[in-house]
Every structure is written in C-alpha cells, then in structure tokens.
Length: 62
Image: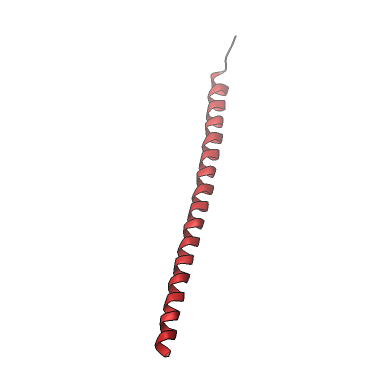
C-alpha cells in the first residue's frame, strides 16, 4: 500500500485548522455573551444610582 505523505499531512493540517476555527468561534461567542451580560448589569446599577441621586435631589428641593 503506497501512502502519499503529502496528502496525509495536508489533511491533518486542514482538520487542525477546522478544529481551531470552531474552538475560536465558540470562545468568541462566549466572550460576547459574557460581556453583554456584564454590561447589562452595569447599566442596571447605574440606573439605580441615578434614581437614588434624583430622589435625594427631590428631597433637597422640598
């Protein structure tokens, strides 16, 4: 049985690149989702702080 080592190496490299792409894409999507969740939490916290400041300012006007 004659094995063409060039095609074997090519297939291994191509398969490795596909696996690398899938892993990278998965990690990218995961990072986007985590950053989005963190940003939403920060925005909610800022909103609560602004509400508290507005309440304090309204109390000071009276």
